[in-house]
Length: 322
Length: 283
Image: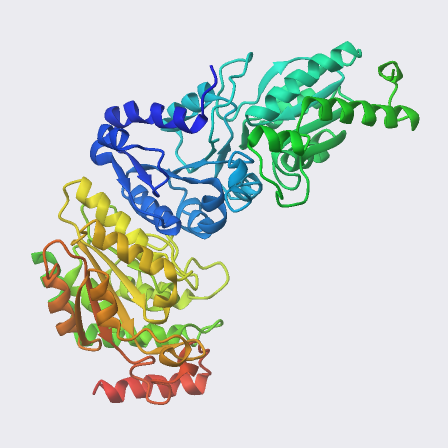
């Protein structure tokens, strides 16, 4: 069933608050928690108003005294506006603050670039000690919220806004472990977030029809990156394609390219939002299609890259070219 | 204040004598290889002395006591004064102060958690009050009587995040939170009133819902009296505006922006120590 990951987070947190008195939920007037939700959370929920720097500072101060705050804000405001508070107050001190960042990627849709976050993953994953996850569906969100209870340091969770479809396949999601959703020896399709992962699964089906077998990795954890699964999948492959709702620089594609350049050199094609601010109205689906973050784009990228490689003699897999 | 603290203070001398020792450490540290934030260190020395030797319920032998009072130096550039105060209070040996600014030392130019007694690192201005709100909130949830103190610079008040936290503290009725403003009237390049005037300070804080008092920031006993008495109004956070002089105790630098960051030459080092002796009647 389609469901918004931000709502999955909220609904997963409420029963945890009751069981774990050290947990807190600090809000910045995001509206994610209705009056009823706030009442259910009781004293463990506080709306601190529209002040994201203060939100992060208060959370850090509480965490330094043994509390474990979940803070609600939008990805755009968390990682741009409040970055210094996250860096110095939270990451530097390795404090267990959970930054629950809604409206990640293009999820803000028609609200425009002020509310879209196409840089958050790049910014968060360079911070020492920060765990960075992008759940691809509601079930993964619930799992990550639960697993965060065993995480000593800070956590950034990129969430969506509206309902997105569930992943049809895959092993249970575990923070730090890439999910192998499909195994194939020719190319690796690595992605994160609801639409990109689904697009890669669909692309793998199409590629199989062309005789190209793809491994599909849901790399929901950007830091610490599961380099073992990634390099093991990439070693036999001719090509790795990444797809994400993020500017092409510094996000999952950046993380994958950095890792493979050092550990298992292979051609990497990074697909994402081009180097521009969104310039038109559209909901998330429209913008994903507009910027071609689609299965068709992945298929084209794979075939073009393999074609080029074959013509330049860099691969012996010429049978892939049709 | 506990009986143990009283005994310790008797052994250490009056608050003025302790402050005088801390000032000498600060001057010595500014004669080290990197120099230091001399003016802002000296302007808040009496506040730090009052806090650590009369007000704060902290024990150097149990720095992690969950019910301790907590202090944050939001104007982190006065780290040298904090380090000297912590060393005099027994958190680490006074001899280590000679390592300030030296390669490999843990005594960085802004407070770091590696130094015993430092709660959280500070240095980028405008962070301390929100952290202090977090401390005070956590104490409230833990039903702890602990108080949280945050020392801010008056130039620092130009950071908007200070006022985000000021709003939150008043809204949450954090009356176990106490801010002190080291109001020395100067910032790096000049007078605060010329760069971005923050006066009338008391009215500004009051309008944000805080209980406000203003005192001479170089009278440690008076500072201690007011800080000990907080909260002054139930349900309100307290802010003590300490009127201070940047570079206090050094006539050749006091009240001058040039005191902000100083590397003392051997000659000026002697001159400064002589000046401290003269002003404190200890020569």
